[in-house]
Image (cartoon, rainbow, N blue to C red; front, side, top):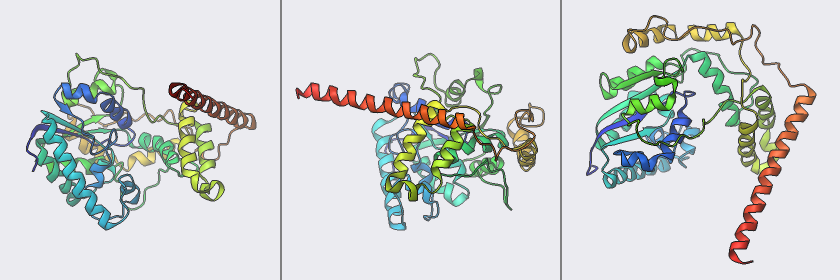
Length: 363
């Protein structure tokens, strides 16, 4: 057991596409300032995003993409990882002796689906803190699913449009009520702080201000404010990346993943904007599937707010879905030219850095 117990562990669990990457960038940039305020944002779960938290809850290796983020590919590695991670986190907390702890990983929402899984994390965190407060930002499900399309392309998928299909069971990533019940059953009634990811509902219309209020961080400090992270790609950027992702290993060889990540960085800088959207009817039908759960959330966490939980305005969606949209030839040529210039700028930057290093060594 850790020698020191913090008062509160603030566990930020997303949801996905609610500014989690920006929150994590803020926490990383302000790690020293947080420590001065009595808060530990530990390094052992991850320097910014902390996938070790969700990975620790896994009972087997079926979540391959998640476990790959912590270097696990088989059962023996999983058990060794769990043991080592728990020891490192306890040591880090003991040495820092913080008043409060902040942890952040959106996979704690979208990958943890059972009481058994969450119980593993709860046992660890309650060794480190007297109480766990769960911070859970939620977003209208059709908007989150549409925004998630860019993320899907960035991690290597190549489908032509946002996936708003639902099979037999509501997807965990969008079933917010299920997550609320799971976490309150585990950490206790009143342990979950649900917040709506909408500028009109955030404190001061600002996610960082809202998050600081949720964690009790003082506003008087000179907090570093990183740029917004993980922005959606526009339609041209999405089509460019989807084309690259198709059969990339066969076309580009063993370095295809390295090339993909470099391309994503360039696209993020040059092609931010509104992406391909489903039709208005598809969006409405998708949101309808979550009507009961959303109303349960409203009644429990926002009783002062009139139904429905989210503003149901679909004006930004087209009447027809856009899966067949393709850029005009000039747009495609222009995109290639812009990416070429971006690549040349990076080459020039690296050459200048190498030249400076040689000059420092007197070569």
